Length: 429
Image 1: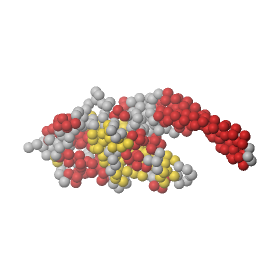
Image 2: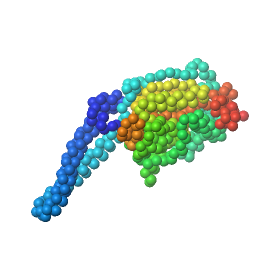
Image 3: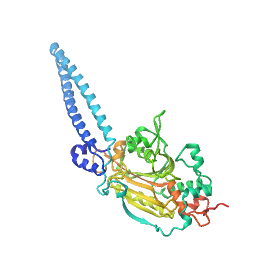
């Protein structure tokens, strides 16, 4: 959520920043008008409150002097003023709620370094690693959904019968490969990130903290009976670890990781390619998240990106890194780098990690602050996160890339300890 104080002091700067996203500034105009009225009424309420307090002191003095007529007159005035104070306070609270409601729908201010653009076509490709379109043989140009069926390691048909479209089921060595990827991602980040196993259903305010609500309610699974939400990513519960807390700057940056199942309705996926693992409702992911000061954030952002990139590189996959433009970054993000792995069978670049800096946008919603070591008061922390490894698309790119001429799948060396020492998923007999 944006800082209302900055909106007050730099309204045109904030509106220009939001316009870089391609978003309209009319909500900000409404916020400014409502906030101005709120402050006016608040000042009037506070003046009346001060007058009531002064009258209370006068009444006490008059009672001591036995001046009952003046006392009664002042008490009548105090009752009238008290009623007006109550009415003004109710109006101020109503305006505060309306301001917050609007601000919850306004996106974050993009970083100055974030490239301008209208959509994904304007994203900047920073670099491409390991990709040679002419280096892939015919046996690698088979889609993972066909490979999975042939080897009996991916069963989409039965998953659809159980749960509906865009659900999948891994079997045998395919399920083992899922587990190997998860453990591989957890172990390689254990040196700096504390492992957490958070709940996978959370309260509404927890979803609001990251910006997933109210804007993206249609893409989330809501358990209406209990008013709980199935998490779309471990970013949601991890962000709220320090909710309503004040941390010490000496403890920052704080770094967490979590493996969870993730649930997304993908309500906006109509017309998109949803075959195989390209777009699914439920998937496993290892998430990395950090609390940091603004000064620490660039280093932490680079660290998460390097760790996510290293995992894809060590699995022997071709990939590229994109600097997302202002028209394509997430609503809560100030700067995002995407890692896309190339899947030769699907002949597509697949997003496998988004590494984002949210500035203080999420932490302001979650009320996470810290005591600065060199100043009084508190400041709002910055949050950053990225996918250490999201299973479905990595699984897809891996089985396509490492498919051999005989139909077997080579296991990348870093995964072999997690596969019981096996170096391949064998071809069908």
